[in-house]
Structure formats: structure tokens, C-alpha cells
Image (cartoon, rainbow, N blue to C red; front, side, top):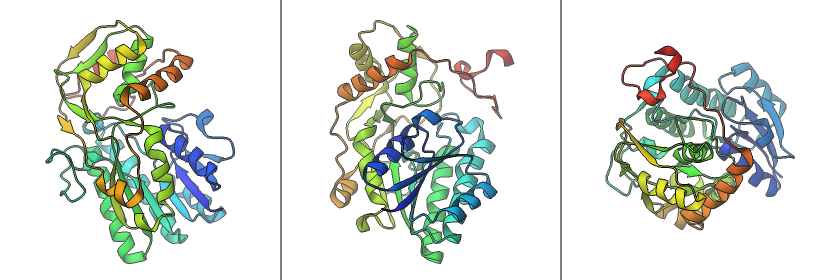
Amino acid sequence: MSKVLVTGGAGFLGAHLARELLERGHEVVVLDDLSGGLASQVPEGARFVRGSVVDDALVERLFAETRFEVVYHLAAYAAEGLSPFIRRFNYENNVVGSMTVLNACIRHEVRRFVFTSSIAVYGTGELPLRESATPRPEDPYGIAKYAVELDLAAATKQFGIEHTIFRPHNVYGELQSTRDRYRNVVGIFLNQVLKEQPLTVFGDGLQTRAFTYVRDLVPTIAASGFDEAARDRVFNIGGDVPTSVLALAQTLREVTGSRVPIHHLPARHEVVHAYADHTLAKERLGARLDATSLAEGLARTWAWARTLGPQETPPFSAIEIERGLPPSWLDPRSR
């Protein structure tokens, strides 16, 4: 049994990962400030510590109390589209927070740091996106993730700490937040169906993504902390089949039996087409990333979402720049 830390372990992907690690027999500690996750999602058997990764004193105490072998760092504010309007917040949480955890890992001689990055690091590149491509992120979220990747490589070279980096994309499934109006299109659509509201699509909806059912990638991430084949490597991880946002909306209407209309909003600044090649993860790590079809995964997620019912989606309270912010994201009280 190994002692492992999962930052962001009360959130969507983190809670699934914490459960998987427990099932594999590890002793799991979860660190989460509950800014996006829920304490009720922390799996039974894990020790839960409420706090932020930017709290250096708290992080240091946690590492002094428990000698972790592997740290899975998932804590982040992963709103790519919103990141140009919350630059300071983005870099503080996604870069400074990551460095706070990495510092503690180095000081306390953690063996491996597993980091969930994003295919946002690629920006607009030749499709499918491959690990061999030179990252050219186009927004602060992608820049933040790539900065952490670069620092991890430097830390490995200087201090010998092992690292594994995953670049996931468009993950959906049970426990996904349906309360956030800025990120996770599946969660947004589910909540709109529950409220019997139109499904809102930016632009023509022909932008493409490869959607990934959460339970198809969690086992690979969990195993990577102990797999020599994952040592000091970067892996794309996610679904292989690109789907337009418009097709996603139509599939979700079929799965849910809903007749809500699709409402097109003005196009926003975003990468139009983004999907990746996963040959490396399949060949080196044995990943099975398309075990669940989009329709099946959406059906499972819908069954779970119905137990929650419709959710309120409050606006982000600390927008730093309103210039160019999509009108649908503005807080009506600020107008």
C-alpha cells in the first residue's frame, strides 16, 4: 500500500481518481478547497483535507504529516474560455498553486508527480494533435498548463523527482459539475435540459472536440504513478472520435428525449477543431479510451444528473476584464 495525495479530489475527475486509487489498495489523502468540488464526492475511505493549493503553510503541514510516494495534481480552475478574462486568477490557481505543491514534493522527496495538463497547450495545430508537436497555447489556461509542464521537466532534471503528464480533453460523466456556466459543455447542456431551456451553442456549432467518458481514462491515470513506462513522459489521453458541438447537442436531445431547441449565440474566440492522437498512451500504458460510446456515456451521465435536478449557475464573482466577454457570461447585475 502506498500513500498518495490527490489535489482537487473532491472535484469531478479527482473524485473518480481517488476512488480508483482506493480500490487499488492505496492510502488516499484528498486536498480540495471545494471551490468547484463537493465534500460529498470524496470517496469513503479517503482522508479529506479542506484547503487550497495556494496555501503554502497548509500544503507544507500536510506533507510534513504524511510521507507521500505519489502526488496526483488535479487541482485547477479549468475554464479555458473564461481564462482571458481572469488572467490573474488563472495564473495564481493554475501556476502558483502547482508550484506550491511541487515545492513540497521536492522538499519531502516525493517519488513521482502526476499532472493533468490539457490539450489546450497545443493551441491550433495539425490534427490529430500529437505529443511530438511543439505546443503553442493560445489562451492563458493553456499557457498556464504548459508553464507547469516545462517546470516539471526542469525539476526532474535538477532534483530527480519523476513526473508523468497527461493532456486530457473534454472529459464528461457522473459527478461532473452542472453548476458552472463557463466550462464543460456536457454539464451545461444537461442543466439546460433539466431546466427545459434551449441548448446554447456558440457560433455555428461545427467546432469539433473528442469527448471522453471519465471512467475510460481514470484507470490509466491511476496506474501511471506506479508504471515505469509512464516515467518522465507526456501522454495525450481521451477519446479518438471527433464530434461537433452541434452533433453533441443533437445526441443529447435523443438520449434525454428532450425537445428543447438549440439556440445559437455569437461565436467566441476559441480553437475551432481540437482532437488528439492517443497511440502513445495505448501502446505504452495499455489505455482503453473509447470503451464507452458517446451515446452510452451520455445516457449514464443523464441518469445521474436527473438525481440532482436543475442547478443554479451563479456568475463568476471576480471577472477581471469585461471587454470582449460573451454577453451570455456577463452578470446581469453589472450591466
